[in-house]
Length: 312
Ligand code: HEC
Ligand SMILES: [Cu+2]
Image (tube, rainbow, N blue to C red):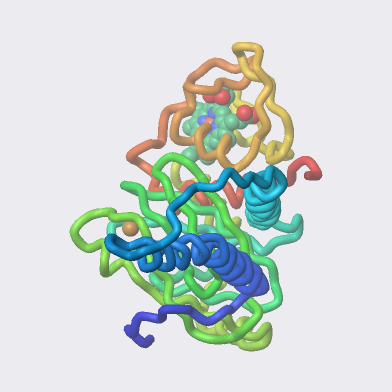
């Protein structure tokens, strides 16, 4: 990886091109609006400087349409940019339904990635080009921020909360990946490589990682090891909800609210079980905070999702 500073990083996704066009056009607009001001400033400073014999009578000469236009036109231009950038931003908020999901955990001072096939890597993210990839991210400790300049995307990674972003890489290559939030002494070393591979190379790479069990299977092992199965297996003597079909479905809570069982809900059910208690059950589930790492919670969550869920 080159450690040179790229003033204008390469574009490795379609989104990158759109962001650059927006930034470039906005820069041009700002230049076009401010250049005349500075130019006239200089012209007037020279023409009306002290001692210069210039005509300083101030004739009353008002052109209302000129005045209105120089307010209205820039206003409309700025609103145009507002609409354009909001559109780009909302595109970035809505990943395509069939996105390929990669889990991310930020930790002082490294990035950990989990691929659906079970492959895991640290400070390197390998993805196939031409596939929309959604990152579901959280932090094990403080606030980090995952930044991949070549894709023009950046998102804070927060402890206790899932945030996400998505992209579709278009150009195979190796690009920098960084933490963009000051997160302690070694923050500046929290860097890595983003590797976009062709579909074939990605499959080949997966082979070499030697992951034989997918995330759900790894989660199932944890589900037994940490005793979840003792309560949650149908037929257990403990009265606990079945987790089959949970993901994506509405869950009535004991306080009358109904909540959607998304990734965050499953995460919180495991780490903060007494906060949202499912209706009809007693709050007997022990908390697994400080027992399970965020990566393990993601594995358990993958297992719970594999048990089926509502169509979303
Ligand atoms: C002592 C029994 C017990 C153990 C052990 C246990 N749970 Fe639970 N769990 C429950 C009960 C009872 C509820 C329903 C009450 C509540 O929401 O807290 C529940 C709720 C849940 C929910 C929310 C389900 C829903 O329908 O809203 C999830 C997800 C969950 N548990 C996952 C786990 C995982 C993962 C583990 C292991 C790390 C685990 N549980 C360990 C008893 C248990
Ligand atoms: Cu960081």
